[in-house]
Length: 406
Image (spheres, rainbow, N blue to C red):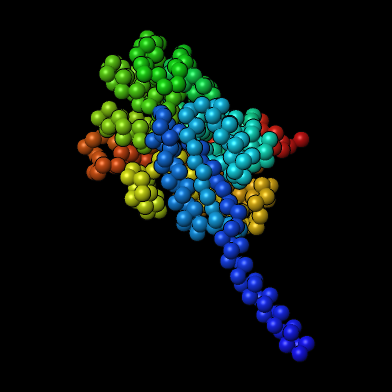
């Protein structure tokens, strides 16, 4: 009788466990990722809703769960305002238990997010911001600068143009952290390679009229008018320069940060011949085309380097969480820096101690209308810039995380 009672009790415990386990799994605490983007402003085409789509695609391809927990994405529009970006991120960390934030913001907002990430010991992945300070003077043990930065943009386009004979420059610069960094990094490259900077003018973000700035550039007689801006500001600059006939007068316009969607917005007739540095092009090889076609089916547009990079970064992050077997920030960061990145976005990519993800960049040129075979056939890749040449070497870094030989 005692044996029968024990067997009955054991059976009851097993049955109870079977009933409880599915409920516990269903109630597992979500693993949350925050996507902070410009949903409707001047950068919305490059990151925006498309970046949120890319993050969701990566989560779906990963399987939708990590550490046995369902993965959720929280997204928000920071409205190109630093205070809104910081407030939303703090809310996500304090109230919603967000584990990581992937951003497509301006550099000023990104620097604020970086400081908050240090305070909260949370990982921030920079997919859209550009300032090289994020992995240099302002570097953090909890962040990754994944796609591009002002050093790579200037070192790619600025170097190629200066060596090609464009040895005098005038800058039209977006008047915030990104523009300032891009102008400085490019000016350093120009001067280092024997060129001269003849002047610069600062333009407020989201300027509707660039005529006075362009006329100052024209009056400078510089061979190159460098546009240290982005988004619709870059588009307006190029469009208005074309209307004024600036390039017909012998000066050359150089866009230091241009995206696929800028070219699409300008049209090939206006944009043809523009050269710029890019981190991804959808029609580069079979792998990029395969991802791009899947993305297009969801978003009805080809991916920018930010959107493609956000997919890659999300996937790499989730692989690192799995490898760490924990949601501990230090353990995940260690795995992210330990594991190489090999996918459609990067071949043998590597996250350095300063948080810079090093990968190949591309020198792109906008096609002539006659050379384009289809709607999104907009660019040709003139050169591959190896990652160790594209990004700032650690020997030149002032990041406190970088150990220098004594």
